[in-house]
Length: 151
Image (cartoon, rainbow, N blue to C red; front, side):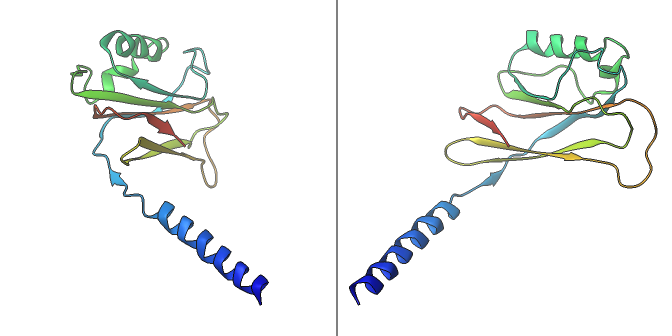
């Protein structure tokens, strides 16, 4: 009987811990899409699969210069002048792919402890063009005093 009581108490404890973890309040962060698409330099732009947080003008200009190495990609950005006292840039790049149709989607939310950027890499379904591409996604979010975590 004592063993059964201990098991029940243990299960109640474990379930209460799990329910507390699930009660973390997550709020969606309003982001502004600056650009998404594919680089077509077959990797010559120098990006690997990477996630970046840009919080100053110098790094922003450096990113745009790298992206423009083969094609003037930044001319299609919705904006290039960023007020870094109010905003930060999230830039995500995937690996170079051997075909078209690949893309990236982001979901950005915040808790009391961090800003969480969930990255979803999307592959083509069905036939795709036979051209080397490198998907990217760049967005602007309000500056916060929370660490930014990618998953």
